[in-house]
Image (cartoon, rainbow, N blue to C red):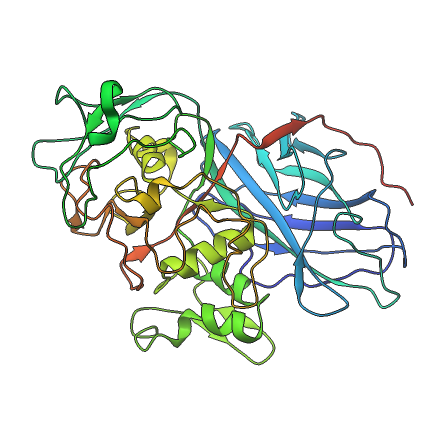
Length: 427
C-alpha cells in the first residue's frame, strides 16, 4: 500500500491516472494522479484508471487489492464504493486480467487477480459508484487517496495439517496420523466431534481447550482465498493513521508505545501528515486491536489458523513471504469458543469513532480484547519445532511488540469476476 499519502483534487469527470508498483520485494507506491468530476454529479459512471507496474519475481498467483478513501465535505475520510460492473484490467502483453468485486454491496474494494508471469504492467479502469457512496460532487472538489495491497491467491483444495512428534498440541486425525481437511464443512474436533469425530489435539494453557466442533462457517482454507504477501508494514500503517483523527487516531497510534522508537519504529505523526521513514519495514507494536482495525478499514479480515495451516502445507508457502521464521503470525484460533465463532465476515471499509471495527458488521471477529485469537509460526530463532506446533495457538495477548506481525486475508466466496468492460465513462 502507498506509504506516501496520495492526494488528488477532484474537479470534473473522474479519470484518475495512478502509477502503482505492487512489488514482490519492494513497497507498493502510488503517484501521478489526475482527477476531474462534474460538480453535483451522482451518476455511477466515473472511472478510476490505474497503471500498475509489478516489479521483480512474479509467481503467477499474484493479486492486487485496490481500495480508496475520499475526504467527505462534512469531514473525515470515507470509503469509496465501487460499482457492480463496468471495470476492466489488462496486462502489458494484451491479456485480460480478472477483476473481482463483491456480489453485493458495499463494494469497498476491487481485486485484480491472476496476471501472467510475463506481465510487467497492468492497466485497470474501475468504476466508482457515487450513489452508493452517497456523494454529490461539491463545487470545490474532493481529496482522494488510493491504496493497494499486494496479495497472493491461495487456491482451492484440501490439505494435510502439519504435525510432528515434538510439536505441542498439534491437530491430528483420531487415528493419530496427519489430519486431512478436505472441505469447508464442519470439522469434528475433540469431544465435540461425536460420531463424526475426525481429529483432536491436546488441551493446554495456550494451545486451546481441545473442544469442538469447528463450525462449517469457520474459514478452513479449503476454499480459495487471498492473503497479504507480506506482513503489515510501517508504510501501510502510516497510510491508515493518516485517514483517522481524534479519538480514533489516538487509540490506534502505535508510536505512543514507550519502546516504539527503540524497537525500530519509523512512523512519525506530524500535525498535517503521518509519514513512515522505513515504509517497507514490518509494523512494530501492532496489537490484535490495531490489526483488526486496519483490516476492517482496508476491507479485509483476520486470518484463521486453519488458513495458516493451508498456506504452510505448501513447501514454498505459495510464495507468501516470511510465513515461517519471520515474525509471529496472529490468527483466529479454533481453541476457544470465541475463536470458533468466527465466520470470516469481511471488513466494511470503515471504523467507529473509537477506531474499532463495528460490532454489528463484524460481530464474529475476536474483539479488541483478543479473546479468540492466538499465534502461529514463530520469530527468528524462536521458530516452533514444526509448522503444526500450536503452543500459542490460543494465547490471546492484547499487547504488541517487535516480534509479532499482522497479516490480513480476503475470502473469495463473496467475490465475483466481472466481464472486462472498456466502455468509456459518461462525460
